[in-house]
Image 1 (cartoon, rainbow, N blue to C red):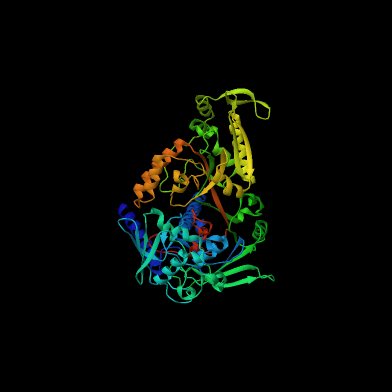
Image 2 (cartoon, rainbow, N blue to C red):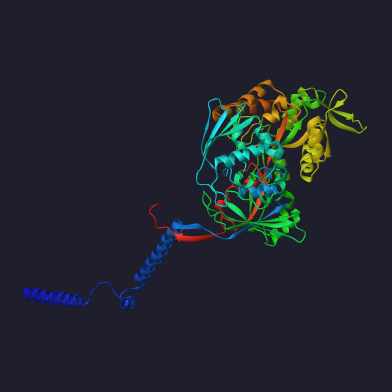
Length: 602
Protein backbone atom coordinates (compact mmCIF):
# COMPACT_ATOMS: atom_id res chain seq x y z
CA UNK A 1 0.00 0.00 0.00
CA UNK A 2 2.77 2.40 0.91
CA UNK A 3 4.66 1.42 -2.17
CA UNK A 4 1.62 2.16 -4.34
CA UNK A 5 1.27 5.67 -2.85
CA UNK A 6 4.91 6.40 -3.54
CA UNK A 7 4.51 5.29 -7.13
CA UNK A 8 1.43 7.52 -7.56
CA UNK A 9 3.27 10.57 -6.12
CA UNK A 10 6.27 9.91 -8.29
CA UNK A 11 4.01 9.61 -11.30
CA UNK A 12 2.28 12.91 -10.40
CA UNK A 13 5.66 14.67 -9.90
CA UNK A 14 6.93 13.38 -13.22
CA UNK A 15 3.75 14.57 -14.92
CA UNK A 16 4.09 18.09 -13.44
CA UNK A 17 7.75 18.23 -14.42
CA UNK A 18 6.88 17.24 -17.93
CA UNK A 19 4.18 19.94 -18.04
CA UNK A 20 6.66 22.59 -16.83
CA UNK A 21 9.27 21.45 -19.30
CA UNK A 22 6.67 21.64 -22.04
CA UNK A 23 5.62 25.19 -21.06
CA UNK A 24 9.21 26.39 -20.65
CA UNK A 25 10.07 24.83 -23.96
CA UNK A 26 7.39 26.88 -25.69
CA UNK A 27 8.23 30.20 -23.94
CA UNK A 28 11.47 31.96 -24.88
CA UNK A 29 11.86 33.80 -21.55
CA UNK A 30 10.79 33.33 -17.96
CA UNK A 31 10.18 37.08 -17.56
CA UNK A 32 6.44 37.92 -17.74
CA UNK A 33 5.32 40.01 -20.68
CA UNK A 34 3.39 43.26 -20.29
CA UNK A 35 0.20 41.40 -21.24
CA UNK A 36 0.86 38.85 -18.52
CA UNK A 37 1.66 41.51 -15.91
CA UNK A 38 -1.87 42.85 -16.07
CA UNK A 39 -3.02 39.63 -14.31
CA UNK A 40 -0.52 39.99 -11.50
CA UNK A 41 -3.14 41.24 -9.07
CA UNK A 42 -4.86 37.83 -9.34
CA UNK A 43 -1.77 36.09 -8.02
CA UNK A 44 -0.65 38.63 -5.35
CA UNK A 45 -2.61 39.66 -2.31
CA UNK A 46 -3.08 43.31 -1.22
CA UNK A 47 -0.03 43.33 1.05
CA UNK A 48 2.19 41.91 -1.68
CA UNK A 49 0.80 44.44 -4.18
CA UNK A 50 1.53 47.34 -1.78
CA UNK A 51 5.10 46.12 -1.36
CA UNK A 52 5.47 45.86 -5.12
CA UNK A 53 4.13 49.40 -5.72
CA UNK A 54 6.39 50.81 -2.99
CA UNK A 55 9.41 49.14 -4.53
CA UNK A 56 8.51 50.57 -7.93
CA UNK A 57 8.15 54.10 -6.47
CA UNK A 58 11.53 53.81 -4.71
CA UNK A 59 13.09 52.54 -7.92
CA UNK A 60 11.67 55.45 -9.95
CA UNK A 61 12.79 58.03 -7.35
CA UNK A 62 16.25 56.49 -7.18
CA UNK A 63 16.65 56.55 -10.93
CA UNK A 64 15.44 60.16 -11.03
CA UNK A 65 17.96 61.20 -8.35
CA UNK A 66 20.78 59.42 -10.13
CA UNK A 67 19.84 61.04 -13.42
CA UNK A 68 19.58 64.50 -11.84
CA UNK A 69 22.96 64.07 -10.14
CA UNK A 70 24.58 62.91 -13.36
CA UNK A 71 22.95 65.78 -15.25
CA UNK A 72 24.08 68.43 -12.76
CA UNK A 73 27.63 67.07 -12.54
CA UNK A 74 28.14 66.61 -16.24
CA UNK A 75 26.18 69.50 -17.77
CA UNK A 76 28.55 72.14 -19.10
CA UNK A 77 27.65 75.71 -19.99
CA UNK A 78 29.94 76.84 -22.76
CA UNK A 79 30.31 80.37 -24.10
CA UNK A 80 29.05 80.82 -27.64
CA UNK A 81 30.64 83.36 -29.93
CA UNK A 82 28.54 86.23 -31.19
CA UNK A 83 26.17 88.78 -29.72
CA UNK A 84 26.52 92.45 -28.89
CA UNK A 85 27.34 94.36 -25.72
CA UNK A 86 26.35 98.01 -25.20
CA UNK A 87 27.87 100.12 -22.43
CA UNK A 88 26.98 103.65 -21.41
CA UNK A 89 29.72 106.12 -20.48
CA UNK A 90 29.79 109.79 -19.54
CA UNK A 91 31.71 111.96 -22.00
CA UNK A 92 32.91 111.40 -25.55
CA UNK A 93 36.09 110.23 -27.29
CA UNK A 94 38.68 112.74 -28.42
CA UNK A 95 42.13 111.13 -28.61
CA UNK A 96 41.99 107.34 -28.68
CA UNK A 97 45.74 107.43 -28.62
CA UNK A 98 47.97 105.88 -25.90
CA UNK A 99 50.01 109.11 -25.69
CA UNK A 100 46.99 111.06 -24.47
CA UNK A 101 44.24 108.60 -23.52
CA UNK A 102 44.97 108.90 -19.79
CA UNK A 103 43.60 112.46 -19.92
CA UNK A 104 40.07 111.32 -20.81
CA UNK A 105 38.30 108.32 -19.25
CA UNK A 106 36.38 107.55 -22.46
CA UNK A 107 39.59 107.54 -24.50
CA UNK A 108 41.19 105.31 -21.87
CA UNK A 109 38.30 102.81 -22.08
CA UNK A 110 38.54 102.53 -25.86
CA UNK A 111 42.34 102.43 -25.91
CA UNK A 112 42.21 99.57 -23.39
CA UNK A 113 40.42 97.40 -25.96
CA UNK A 114 42.05 98.59 -29.18
CA UNK A 115 45.74 98.65 -28.22
CA UNK A 116 48.11 96.04 -26.86
CA UNK A 117 50.74 96.86 -24.27
CA UNK A 118 53.91 95.27 -22.96
CA UNK A 119 52.16 94.36 -19.72
CA UNK A 120 48.52 94.32 -18.73
CA UNK A 121 46.71 93.48 -15.48
CA UNK A 122 45.00 90.33 -14.28
CA UNK A 123 41.64 90.14 -12.51
CA UNK A 124 43.29 91.08 -9.21
CA UNK A 125 45.04 94.10 -10.66
CA UNK A 126 48.55 92.65 -10.74
CA UNK A 127 50.85 92.88 -13.75
CA UNK A 128 50.88 90.08 -16.29
CA UNK A 129 52.59 89.86 -19.70
CA UNK A 130 50.71 91.01 -22.77
CA UNK A 131 53.08 91.47 -25.70
CA UNK A 132 55.99 90.41 -23.50
CA UNK A 133 56.98 86.74 -23.47
CA UNK A 134 60.07 87.02 -21.25
CA UNK A 135 61.95 89.63 -19.23
CA UNK A 136 65.11 89.91 -17.15
CA UNK A 137 66.25 92.48 -14.58
CA UNK A 138 69.96 93.15 -14.24
CA UNK A 139 71.83 92.60 -10.97
CA UNK A 140 72.07 96.35 -10.36
CA UNK A 141 68.30 96.60 -11.04
CA UNK A 142 68.81 99.35 -13.59
CA UNK A 143 68.35 97.40 -16.84
CA UNK A 144 65.12 95.66 -17.92
CA UNK A 145 65.43 93.41 -20.96
CA UNK A 146 62.10 92.42 -22.54
CA UNK A 147 61.31 90.00 -25.35
CA UNK A 148 58.03 90.36 -27.22
CA UNK A 149 55.91 87.75 -28.98
CA UNK A 150 56.21 87.09 -32.71
CA UNK A 151 52.55 86.38 -33.47
CA UNK A 152 51.03 89.80 -32.73
CA UNK A 153 49.80 91.85 -35.66
CA UNK A 154 48.11 95.18 -36.22
CA UNK A 155 44.48 95.33 -37.25
CA UNK A 156 45.66 96.03 -40.81
CA UNK A 157 47.58 92.74 -40.87
CA UNK A 158 51.15 94.02 -40.41
CA UNK A 159 53.32 92.47 -37.66
CA UNK A 160 54.02 94.21 -34.34
CA UNK A 161 57.76 94.75 -33.89
CA UNK A 162 60.26 96.15 -31.42
CA UNK A 163 60.50 99.22 -33.66
CA UNK A 164 56.85 99.98 -32.84
CA UNK A 165 57.60 99.77 -29.11
CA UNK A 166 60.65 102.05 -29.33
CA UNK A 167 58.75 104.52 -31.53
CA UNK A 168 55.92 104.77 -29.00
CA UNK A 169 58.31 105.10 -26.06
CA UNK A 170 60.33 107.85 -27.76
CA UNK A 171 57.17 109.79 -28.61
CA UNK A 172 56.04 109.58 -24.98
CA UNK A 173 59.40 110.95 -23.83
CA UNK A 174 59.52 113.66 -26.50
CA UNK A 175 58.31 116.86 -24.83
CA UNK A 176 56.95 118.16 -28.15
CA UNK A 177 54.18 115.56 -28.02
CA UNK A 178 53.22 116.70 -24.50
CA UNK A 179 52.18 113.24 -23.33
CA UNK A 180 51.29 113.15 -19.63
CA UNK A 181 53.09 109.79 -19.45
CA UNK A 182 56.51 111.35 -20.04
CA UNK A 183 57.00 112.07 -16.33
CA UNK A 184 57.01 108.31 -15.67
CA UNK A 185 60.15 107.89 -17.74
CA UNK A 186 62.45 110.66 -16.55
CA UNK A 187 65.98 109.26 -16.71
CA UNK A 188 64.88 106.16 -18.64
CA UNK A 189 66.32 105.18 -22.04
CA UNK A 190 65.29 102.41 -24.43
CA UNK A 191 67.43 100.54 -26.95
CA UNK A 192 66.82 97.79 -29.50
CA UNK A 193 68.70 94.54 -28.85
CA UNK A 194 67.24 92.63 -31.81
CA UNK A 195 63.96 92.36 -33.73
CA UNK A 196 62.17 90.93 -30.69
CA UNK A 197 64.12 92.40 -27.77
CA UNK A 198 64.23 95.82 -26.11
CA UNK A 199 66.18 97.06 -23.10
CA UNK A 200 65.07 99.87 -20.79
CA UNK A 201 67.86 101.48 -18.77
CA UNK A 202 67.20 103.48 -15.59
CA UNK A 203 69.51 106.00 -13.96
CA UNK A 204 68.51 104.70 -10.55
CA UNK A 205 66.77 101.47 -9.50
CA UNK A 206 63.01 101.73 -9.09
CA UNK A 207 61.17 98.56 -8.05
CA UNK A 208 57.69 99.43 -9.45
CA UNK A 209 59.14 100.45 -12.85
CA UNK A 210 57.24 97.81 -14.83
CA UNK A 211 53.97 99.33 -13.59
CA UNK A 212 54.65 102.07 -16.14
CA UNK A 213 54.94 99.63 -19.05
CA UNK A 214 51.19 99.32 -19.52
CA UNK A 215 50.92 102.04 -22.17
CA UNK A 216 49.44 101.06 -25.53
CA UNK A 217 51.80 100.53 -28.47
CA UNK A 218 51.37 102.65 -31.62
CA UNK A 219 52.08 101.31 -35.16
CA UNK A 220 55.21 103.02 -36.43
CA UNK A 221 54.19 102.59 -40.06
CA UNK A 222 51.03 104.67 -39.64
CA UNK A 223 52.28 107.38 -37.27
CA UNK A 224 55.92 108.00 -38.23
CA UNK A 225 55.11 110.83 -40.65
CA UNK A 226 52.74 112.62 -38.26
CA UNK A 227 54.44 115.63 -36.68
CA UNK A 228 53.92 116.62 -33.04
CA UNK A 229 52.06 119.72 -34.20
CA UNK A 230 49.54 117.71 -36.25
CA UNK A 231 49.28 114.77 -33.86
CA UNK A 232 45.99 115.96 -32.41
CA UNK A 233 44.45 116.42 -35.87
CA UNK A 234 45.17 112.92 -37.19
CA UNK A 235 42.15 110.83 -38.17
CA UNK A 236 43.80 107.86 -36.45
CA UNK A 237 42.89 109.46 -33.11
CA UNK A 238 39.23 108.60 -33.73
CA UNK A 239 39.69 105.68 -36.15
CA UNK A 240 42.65 103.97 -34.52
CA UNK A 241 44.50 100.86 -35.59
CA UNK A 242 45.95 98.80 -32.78
CA UNK A 243 46.70 95.15 -32.04
CA UNK A 244 44.29 94.56 -29.15
CA UNK A 245 41.27 92.25 -28.82
CA UNK A 246 38.87 94.70 -30.52
CA UNK A 247 39.20 96.89 -33.58
CA UNK A 248 37.44 100.01 -34.78
CA UNK A 249 34.26 99.36 -36.79
CA UNK A 250 32.28 102.61 -36.95
CA UNK A 251 31.18 105.73 -35.12
CA UNK A 252 27.88 107.60 -35.13
CA UNK A 253 27.46 111.37 -34.89
CA UNK A 254 24.42 113.53 -34.27
CA UNK A 255 23.42 116.47 -36.48
CA UNK A 256 25.77 118.74 -34.53
CA UNK A 257 28.76 116.52 -35.19
CA UNK A 258 28.95 115.08 -31.66
CA UNK A 259 29.93 111.42 -31.44
CA UNK A 260 27.02 109.52 -29.88
CA UNK A 261 28.12 105.91 -30.32
CA UNK A 262 31.28 103.98 -31.09
CA UNK A 263 31.31 100.38 -32.35
CA UNK A 264 34.15 97.89 -32.05
CA UNK A 265 34.29 94.38 -33.48
CA UNK A 266 36.25 91.36 -32.30
CA UNK A 267 39.76 91.04 -33.71
CA UNK A 268 39.67 87.57 -35.25
CA UNK A 269 43.47 87.56 -35.60
CA UNK A 270 44.12 88.38 -31.95
CA UNK A 271 47.13 86.49 -30.55
CA UNK A 272 45.30 85.59 -27.33
CA UNK A 273 41.88 83.89 -27.25
CA UNK A 274 39.52 85.81 -29.53
CA UNK A 275 36.68 87.56 -27.65
CA UNK A 276 33.35 85.76 -27.53
CA UNK A 277 31.29 88.93 -27.93
CA UNK A 278 31.34 89.95 -31.58
CA UNK A 279 30.50 93.64 -31.17
CA UNK A 280 31.04 96.11 -28.35
CA UNK A 281 29.21 99.44 -28.54
CA UNK A 282 29.92 102.45 -26.34
CA UNK A 283 27.12 105.00 -26.09
CA UNK A 284 28.02 108.44 -24.81
CA UNK A 285 25.95 110.54 -22.41
CA UNK A 286 26.28 114.04 -21.05
CA UNK A 287 24.90 113.37 -17.57
CA UNK A 288 24.53 110.35 -15.24
CA UNK A 289 20.75 110.80 -15.12
CA UNK A 290 20.59 110.33 -18.89
CA UNK A 291 22.72 107.19 -18.69
CA UNK A 292 20.65 105.67 -15.86
CA UNK A 293 17.45 106.32 -17.85
CA UNK A 294 18.95 104.42 -20.80
CA UNK A 295 19.90 101.58 -18.45
CA UNK A 296 16.36 101.40 -17.04
CA UNK A 297 14.89 101.37 -20.57
CA UNK A 298 17.16 98.50 -21.67
CA UNK A 299 18.92 100.69 -24.25
CA UNK A 300 22.31 99.81 -22.76
CA UNK A 301 23.57 96.69 -21.00
CA UNK A 302 25.85 98.44 -18.53
CA UNK A 303 26.89 101.74 -17.00
CA UNK A 304 30.63 102.38 -16.77
CA UNK A 305 30.30 103.73 -13.23
CA UNK A 306 27.40 104.03 -10.82
CA UNK A 307 27.85 106.76 -8.24
CA UNK A 308 26.32 106.03 -4.80
CA UNK A 309 23.68 108.73 -5.15
CA UNK A 310 22.20 106.92 -8.17
CA UNK A 311 21.79 103.48 -6.58
CA UNK A 312 18.12 104.00 -5.92
CA UNK A 313 17.51 105.24 -9.47
CA UNK A 314 17.95 101.73 -10.90
CA UNK A 315 14.38 100.50 -11.37
CA UNK A 316 15.01 96.73 -11.52
CA UNK A 317 18.18 96.14 -9.47
CA UNK A 318 17.66 92.36 -9.49
CA UNK A 319 18.30 92.41 -13.23
CA UNK A 320 21.83 93.69 -12.76
CA UNK A 321 25.14 92.69 -11.26
CA UNK A 322 26.67 95.45 -9.15
CA UNK A 323 30.38 94.68 -9.44
CA UNK A 324 32.16 96.33 -6.52
CA UNK A 325 35.75 96.73 -7.66
CA UNK A 326 38.56 97.66 -5.33
CA UNK A 327 40.58 100.76 -6.25
CA UNK A 328 44.01 101.66 -4.82
CA UNK A 329 42.46 104.65 -3.07
CA UNK A 330 42.76 105.55 0.60
CA UNK A 331 40.34 107.95 2.26
CA UNK A 332 41.08 109.34 5.68
CA UNK A 333 41.52 112.29 8.01
CA UNK A 334 44.94 113.91 7.60
CA UNK A 335 46.34 116.01 10.43
CA UNK A 336 48.38 119.15 9.76
CA UNK A 337 51.78 118.45 11.33
CA UNK A 338 53.49 121.43 9.75
CA UNK A 339 52.14 123.79 12.40
CA UNK A 340 53.39 123.02 15.92
CA UNK A 341 50.88 125.43 17.45
CA UNK A 342 47.91 123.24 16.46
CA UNK A 343 46.48 120.87 19.07
CA UNK A 344 46.91 117.95 16.64
CA UNK A 345 50.70 118.29 16.88
CA UNK A 346 50.40 116.14 20.02
CA UNK A 347 50.51 112.35 19.30
CA UNK A 348 48.21 111.70 22.29
CA UNK A 349 45.54 113.96 20.82
CA UNK A 350 45.78 112.32 17.39
CA UNK A 351 45.55 108.83 18.86
CA UNK A 352 42.63 109.84 21.07
CA UNK A 353 40.75 111.27 18.09
CA UNK A 354 41.32 107.98 16.25
CA UNK A 355 39.98 105.89 19.14
CA UNK A 356 36.92 108.16 19.42
CA UNK A 357 35.57 107.30 15.93
CA UNK A 358 33.49 104.18 15.36
CA UNK A 359 34.52 104.08 11.72
CA UNK A 360 33.05 100.66 11.00
CA UNK A 361 29.57 101.79 11.99
CA UNK A 362 30.09 105.14 10.28
CA UNK A 363 31.17 103.64 6.95
CA UNK A 364 28.35 101.10 7.04
CA UNK A 365 25.78 103.85 7.62
CA UNK A 366 27.12 106.47 5.20
CA UNK A 367 28.60 104.18 2.52
CA UNK A 368 26.66 100.91 2.66
CA UNK A 369 28.19 98.30 0.30
CA UNK A 370 30.35 101.03 -1.22
CA UNK A 371 33.56 100.83 0.80
CA UNK A 372 35.64 98.70 3.14
CA UNK A 373 37.11 99.97 6.38
CA UNK A 374 40.90 100.30 6.46
CA UNK A 375 43.36 100.88 9.27
CA UNK A 376 46.63 101.77 7.55
CA UNK A 377 48.39 103.24 4.51
CA UNK A 378 48.59 99.96 2.56
CA UNK A 379 45.40 98.17 1.52
CA UNK A 380 44.51 94.63 2.67
CA UNK A 381 44.70 93.19 -0.86
CA UNK A 382 48.35 94.23 -1.25
CA UNK A 383 51.26 91.80 -0.93
CA UNK A 384 52.81 94.24 1.57
CA UNK A 385 49.82 94.56 3.90
CA UNK A 386 50.57 94.23 7.62
CA UNK A 387 47.74 92.98 9.81
CA UNK A 388 49.72 93.60 13.00
CA UNK A 389 49.38 97.40 13.02
CA UNK A 390 47.44 99.38 15.61
CA UNK A 391 43.88 99.52 14.25
CA UNK A 392 42.56 102.12 16.74
CA UNK A 393 39.32 100.24 17.18
CA UNK A 394 36.48 102.27 18.68
CA UNK A 395 37.27 102.90 22.35
CA UNK A 396 35.97 106.25 23.68
CA UNK A 397 37.18 105.50 27.21
CA UNK A 398 40.74 105.05 25.98
CA UNK A 399 40.37 108.27 24.00
CA UNK A 400 39.38 110.13 27.15
CA UNK A 401 42.28 108.63 29.08
CA UNK A 402 44.80 109.71 26.43
CA UNK A 403 43.44 113.25 26.45
CA UNK A 404 43.54 113.40 30.23
CA UNK A 405 47.14 112.19 30.08
CA UNK A 406 47.88 115.09 27.72
CA UNK A 407 46.39 117.55 30.25
CA UNK A 408 42.94 118.05 28.76
CA UNK A 409 39.97 117.99 31.12
CA UNK A 410 36.27 118.73 30.80
CA UNK A 411 35.34 122.28 31.81
CA UNK A 412 32.32 124.50 31.50
CA UNK A 413 33.79 127.31 29.48
CA UNK A 414 32.88 129.91 26.86
CA UNK A 415 34.18 129.54 23.33
CA UNK A 416 35.43 132.37 21.10
CA UNK A 417 31.86 133.30 20.19
CA UNK A 418 30.97 133.63 23.86
CA UNK A 419 28.82 130.49 23.90
CA UNK A 420 29.14 128.52 27.10
CA UNK A 421 29.53 124.74 26.94
CA UNK A 422 31.27 121.77 28.47
CA UNK A 423 34.38 121.04 26.48
CA UNK A 424 37.83 119.57 26.94
CA UNK A 425 40.17 122.42 27.83
CA UNK A 426 43.65 123.13 29.07
CA UNK A 427 43.69 126.31 31.14
CA UNK A 428 41.53 128.61 29.03
CA UNK A 429 42.19 126.87 25.71
CA UNK A 430 39.34 124.77 24.35
CA UNK A 431 40.27 121.61 22.44
CA UNK A 432 38.68 122.71 19.17
CA UNK A 433 39.18 121.15 15.75
CA UNK A 434 38.03 122.21 12.30
CA UNK A 435 37.46 119.48 9.71
CA UNK A 436 38.04 120.69 6.15
CA UNK A 437 36.22 118.68 3.49
CA UNK A 438 35.81 118.77 -0.30
CA UNK A 439 32.24 119.96 -0.70
CA UNK A 440 29.92 117.07 -1.57
CA UNK A 441 27.03 115.31 0.23
CA UNK A 442 29.03 112.16 1.02
CA UNK A 443 31.89 114.03 2.67
CA UNK A 444 29.46 116.20 4.60
CA UNK A 445 27.64 113.12 5.94
CA UNK A 446 30.96 111.58 7.04
CA UNK A 447 32.11 114.84 8.66
CA UNK A 448 28.87 115.15 10.60
CA UNK A 449 29.34 111.63 11.97
CA UNK A 450 32.94 112.39 12.96
CA UNK A 451 31.87 115.64 14.60
CA UNK A 452 29.32 113.72 16.64
CA UNK A 453 31.90 111.19 17.84
CA UNK A 454 34.42 113.85 18.80
CA UNK A 455 31.95 116.09 20.56
CA UNK A 456 30.72 113.11 22.58
CA UNK A 457 34.12 113.00 24.31
CA UNK A 458 34.27 116.81 24.66
CA UNK A 459 36.16 117.95 21.53
CA UNK A 460 34.49 121.01 20.03
CA UNK A 461 34.30 120.39 16.28
CA UNK A 462 33.40 122.50 13.26
CA UNK A 463 33.17 121.64 9.57
CA UNK A 464 34.49 123.71 6.69
CA UNK A 465 33.40 122.69 3.18
CA UNK A 466 35.49 123.96 0.27
CA UNK A 467 35.64 123.29 -3.46
CA UNK A 468 37.73 120.41 -4.69
CA UNK A 469 39.96 122.82 -6.59
CA UNK A 470 40.69 124.75 -3.40
CA UNK A 471 41.69 121.52 -1.68
CA UNK A 472 44.09 120.51 -4.42
CA UNK A 473 45.55 123.88 -5.31
CA UNK A 474 45.65 125.55 -1.95
CA UNK A 475 45.08 123.47 1.15
CA UNK A 476 47.23 120.49 0.17
CA UNK A 477 50.16 122.81 -0.61
CA UNK A 478 49.94 125.53 2.04
CA UNK A 479 48.60 123.24 4.80
CA UNK A 480 46.08 125.85 5.87
CA UNK A 481 43.93 123.34 7.71
CA UNK A 482 43.79 121.47 11.00
CA UNK A 483 42.25 118.18 9.83
CA UNK A 484 41.55 117.40 6.17
CA UNK A 485 39.17 114.71 4.91
CA UNK A 486 40.93 113.60 1.74
CA UNK A 487 41.63 110.69 -0.61
CA UNK A 488 45.02 109.48 -1.82
CA UNK A 489 45.21 107.69 -5.17
CA UNK A 490 48.05 105.21 -5.38
CA UNK A 491 48.86 102.06 -7.29
CA UNK A 492 48.31 98.37 -6.69
CA UNK A 493 52.06 98.03 -6.29
CA UNK A 494 52.52 100.08 -3.11
CA UNK A 495 55.11 102.82 -3.19
CA UNK A 496 53.99 105.20 -0.41
CA UNK A 497 57.15 107.32 -0.81
CA UNK A 498 55.36 110.32 -2.35
CA UNK A 499 52.74 110.37 0.43
CA UNK A 500 54.86 109.82 3.54
CA UNK A 501 58.53 110.63 2.88
CA UNK A 502 59.62 113.86 4.56
CA UNK A 503 61.07 115.18 1.29
CA UNK A 504 57.55 115.31 -0.13
CA UNK A 505 56.09 117.70 2.47
CA UNK A 506 55.59 120.43 -0.10
CA UNK A 507 53.98 117.98 -2.54
CA UNK A 508 51.76 114.96 -1.80
CA UNK A 509 52.79 114.46 1.84
CA UNK A 510 49.87 116.67 2.81
CA UNK A 511 50.10 115.82 6.51
CA UNK A 512 53.67 117.14 6.61
CA UNK A 513 54.78 113.90 8.24
CA UNK A 514 58.45 113.22 8.88
CA UNK A 515 60.19 110.26 10.49
CA UNK A 516 63.81 109.36 9.69
CA UNK A 517 63.27 105.63 10.16
CA UNK A 518 60.25 105.75 7.87
CA UNK A 519 62.22 107.73 5.30
CA UNK A 520 64.95 105.08 5.22
CA UNK A 521 62.46 102.22 4.88
CA UNK A 522 60.67 103.92 1.99
CA UNK A 523 63.94 104.74 0.25
CA UNK A 524 65.22 101.18 0.51
CA UNK A 525 61.95 99.51 -0.50
CA UNK A 526 61.49 101.42 -3.74
CA UNK A 527 64.94 100.46 -5.10
CA UNK A 528 64.78 96.73 -4.30
CA UNK A 529 63.04 94.25 -6.60
CA UNK A 530 63.17 91.42 -4.08
CA UNK A 531 59.55 90.98 -3.03
CA UNK A 532 60.39 89.55 0.40
CA UNK A 533 62.69 92.46 1.20
CA UNK A 534 60.18 95.04 0.03
CA UNK A 535 57.39 93.36 2.01
CA UNK A 536 59.44 93.34 5.22
CA UNK A 537 60.33 97.02 4.89
CA UNK A 538 56.77 98.08 4.09
CA UNK A 539 55.42 96.11 7.04
CA UNK A 540 57.81 97.89 9.40
CA UNK A 541 56.86 101.21 7.79
CA UNK A 542 53.17 100.56 8.53
CA UNK A 543 53.85 99.85 12.21
CA UNK A 544 55.86 103.07 12.65
CA UNK A 545 53.41 105.24 10.73
CA UNK A 546 50.27 104.05 12.47
CA UNK A 547 51.96 104.46 15.86
CA UNK A 548 52.68 108.12 14.99
CA UNK A 549 49.08 108.53 13.73
CA UNK A 550 49.61 111.37 11.22
CA UNK A 551 46.24 110.35 9.77
CA UNK A 552 43.13 108.39 10.68
CA UNK A 553 42.66 105.87 7.89
CA UNK A 554 38.94 105.42 7.27
CA UNK A 555 37.98 103.46 4.16
CA UNK A 556 38.80 102.18 0.70
CA UNK A 557 35.94 103.11 -1.67
CA UNK A 558 34.59 100.68 -4.23
CA UNK A 559 34.22 101.39 -7.93
CA UNK A 560 30.70 100.15 -8.76
CA UNK A 561 30.34 98.78 -12.28
CA UNK A 562 26.77 97.76 -13.12
CA UNK A 563 26.00 95.20 -15.82
CA UNK A 564 22.88 93.40 -16.97
CA UNK A 565 22.90 89.80 -15.73
CA UNK A 566 22.77 88.53 -19.30
CA UNK A 567 26.46 89.38 -19.49
CA UNK A 568 28.34 86.33 -18.26
CA UNK A 569 31.99 85.67 -17.46
CA UNK A 570 32.89 88.83 -15.56
CA UNK A 571 35.77 88.14 -13.16
CA UNK A 572 37.62 91.38 -12.35
CA UNK A 573 38.05 92.08 -8.62
CA UNK A 574 40.64 94.86 -8.32
CA UNK A 575 41.45 97.69 -10.70
CA UNK A 576 44.27 100.21 -10.87
CA UNK A 577 42.36 102.61 -13.14
CA UNK A 578 38.66 102.69 -14.15
CA UNK A 579 39.42 101.27 -17.62
CA UNK A 580 40.80 98.14 -15.94
CA UNK A 581 37.20 97.04 -15.35
CA UNK A 582 37.40 95.79 -18.97
CA UNK A 583 40.47 93.63 -18.36
CA UNK A 584 38.89 90.22 -18.93
CA UNK A 585 36.46 91.27 -21.68
CA UNK A 586 37.70 88.46 -23.93
CA UNK A 587 36.09 86.03 -21.48
CA UNK A 588 32.67 87.71 -21.41
CA UNK A 589 29.77 86.25 -23.36
CA UNK A 590 26.08 86.87 -23.97
CA UNK A 591 25.25 83.56 -25.66
CA UNK A 592 25.84 80.06 -24.39
CA UNK A 593 25.56 76.38 -25.31
CA UNK A 594 24.86 73.52 -22.94
CA UNK A 595 26.01 69.94 -23.38
CA UNK A 596 26.52 66.78 -21.35
CA UNK A 597 30.16 65.89 -20.75
CA UNK A 598 30.61 62.11 -20.64
CA UNK A 599 34.34 62.25 -19.93
CA UNK A 600 35.72 60.18 -17.07
CA UNK A 601 37.16 63.30 -15.42
CA UNK A 602 33.76 64.25 -14.07
